[in-house]
Image 1 (tube, rainbow, N blue to C red):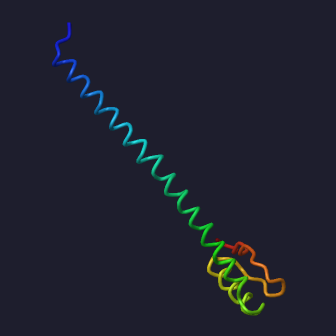
Image 2 (image 1 turned 90 degrees about the vertical axis):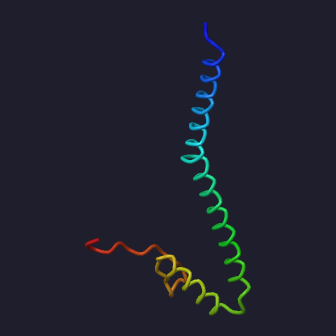
Image 3 (image 1 turned 45 degrees about the vertical axis):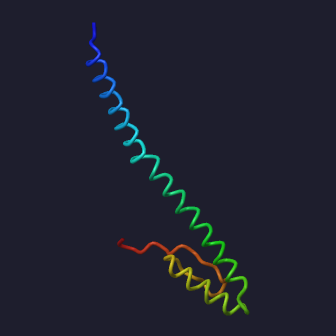
Length: 94
């Protein structure tokens, strides 16, 4: 039969393996997913605050200037004629 020492050593080794597996799951899946969710929520919150601030500007010219600046900062193209922000067309040759 097993001695008490070998049972205790097996329990300690098993606990260590469970600890390692738990840490690996946290490091590879749980923590990165939580960080990405936090970033997404922060982006949504900042976008709402920006939209609200733009709406509170005094006139349409100020609103258009801010919208144009935000569009360019995001790597897009602002169309002055329609006041819309569109994706930048693909450049030939990469």
